[in-house]
Length: 88
Image (cartoon, rainbow, N blue to C red):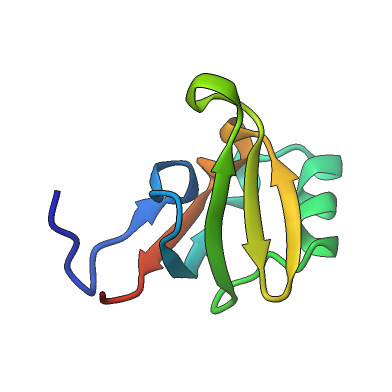
């Protein structure tokens, strides 16, 4: 798949090693405690993220660098985060 600069994908679809910027977060897709947790980890529009690792066999959790911090999040929560991959 060729990714153009303006194409958005969900964070769970971002390939390992690719950096991106958060374009939007569907907070209504998340429960209050999950949304609060992501906000505390620094998830917000415009923030730089990078997919680092996936769990065994491509499953949960996903390791994601948010700014300078590495966090683990569930794939279901990552689906609520739209990102724009950086141009290679």
